[in-house]
Image (cartoon, rainbow, N blue to C red):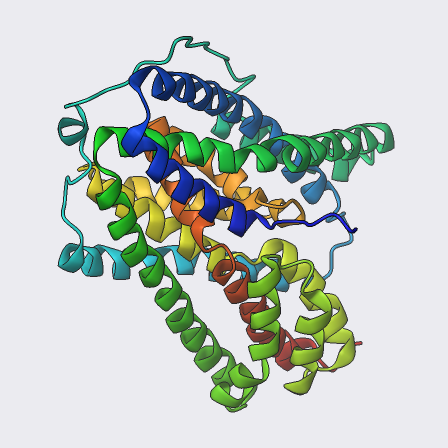
Length: 387
């Protein structure tokens, strides 16, 4: 018999359900054991995120090369602009919507302090460097490789990136459901699981709706530039959206995205260049999902986020996520470090964001690949005649 494989989405759902049920009946000693694992895994995440930035962003910058053409720079520029605009769009909408159906401070530290669980062992694993240092170092080394042409250094970081990818795919991602299980179990034992699940359902639906609205805006702009019917073009991209939604991957959906984009009249050579590139640099859907989850968690825990801090987060997140889509869960992994280092989230808040992000993972990649088609329309308009 073939080995049955369960996807990450199903594992996360099982973790949430089992954790909620166990938390209602688990003795305090068991909850403390699970809390010990939770704290240790959070420390490992903190340690590996700067290494992920170094291992993935550095090769991505080095691979651009000195002879990068105008079309390459245009695609990267438009993709980055779309990604950060999606973050600001999510902030404006979420900040105005959540107060209508979420209760501020419902999960604040005061509300949770009635019953706390301490881990049996609390190890402190110091990261090699912080997130911002890793980003700056990635840019310095990546640009240095471009201008010096250092083949050994480039190969070293390519190999280091493969090690990081292997660690994420074989260790971190498989352990995420257990991490979420321990957090949900503790919340069940604290008596706040009803709030988390009830609010989480509203937050996920809000993020899903925001991605759909953002896609309509994207295609209205792209259609106006390309001189095409935006709604017809958007309809042609539905198969690509459903493919990415079901397999939760922008990269794996490239063949379907390319076929749908060609139906919109984009030249084959433009599609073959733009779609694979956008699958690694255009993260509008994932950014909306992450931003909406983070804003909701901040609102529920009574942690106000100054707009200047949020702007800093969005600009850095757009860069950090560029090279991450090649790794399952990479966008989330590259961004959660910024939640703590830039926005000041606690490990518990970060874990909540991760749970909301993973609870319905597909709509982020679905929005990403559909937005890639909009960028291809714009690129085709300006570069379609230049083979």
